[in-house]
Length: 353
Image 1 (spheres, helix red, strand yellow):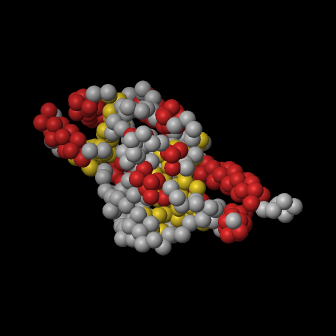
Image 2 (image 1 turned 135 degrees about the vertical axis):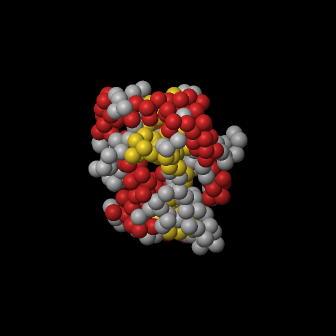
């Protein structure tokens, strides 16, 4: 008991002076760009800017990280790994785990640290969870997600956990090109086979537009990605299980209209008229052919651009840094009280803090 008390007292001191650790478990995409990974790095950077000892954490000691597609300010952030058994965590520390990593919860359930889920894609929640178990079974009572639609979904499934929204943040270099748009279609699909299917079908059904160029947006450096979106006359997005939809918003910030399939779970920003949406993926090529014709004839409705601008302006109040700092401020306050209560229970009468 004396050893446990000493550990708690040390942990409480570290909580109060912000010397505890916050680890964001991150998927190694082996050099491929991913919005979910970028958000992890953004959150770590925000927390470090506000005095927190936050780090990116990978499962394996050998990882590629983000140096091939994100700026050095992210690639140079501190990193840790689970492999090798060198990771030491105490009751004052926090591990933030993506919803996809249910299997990791089983591995770290006995660790004394606080576990927090970061849910960016609702469709992955049960991907690796053991059937019949929920996050609460592994000591998780706090969840971060990116929009109200996902928050509502999580509350329906797991009402015992507390959910908080930390919005997606799109870098400021996503902006309209100063040069005229080019006859380029920026295409982003969850399944790469959909990309090739759309391109090949488009050329078959629209031989008059064989000079139109398609640009597959996967695996590009983020700044080059933004430049390509900025010069494209339209973008195509196919992702039925998207939990938020960063790509169409990036496209709108570049003033590039979006043609896309409506996801099963519709994010808060998505409206009937801020893009050219379809429930039927097979209609995308037909819609794209019509759009290209209208664009060449300078006949794209002005209202579409107006609705895109309204959507982008509506995101201006979403401050990711303020949200994640406020989240951990509240978490730390709660954790401090919990540890003080635990210390008081273990401290002999008359010696309580």
